[in-house]
Image (cartoon, rainbow, N blue to C red; front, side, top):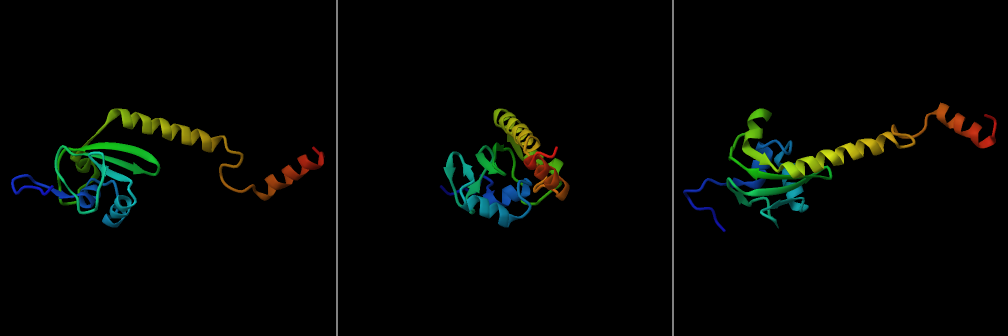
Length: 133
């Protein structure tokens, strides 16, 4: 489906970069190739032309995004201006925030949230195992 001359369109990877979802176009292209980006419910290629009104489903860091393209901009602008390029689905945004809270709670309740036990922690564990406590 080619874009007509009277309808403005731009490449998907370039729009994702301009809307500040990705730091570089190369990262945007990689996510599109891996199938983490869908336009209007179907997998697409980097060169897919999008226009205002298209719905983009995106997965970043295992978190879902559903955005509707509101405007096109060929330049990468500051974040407040970039947020004007799209509208986000409220239900998906709430689900994403709930998932973030669950992830934070899981990290806090982990035995060693900072990684491996320290030398002091290991000594205390050994004391418990020996029954010297």
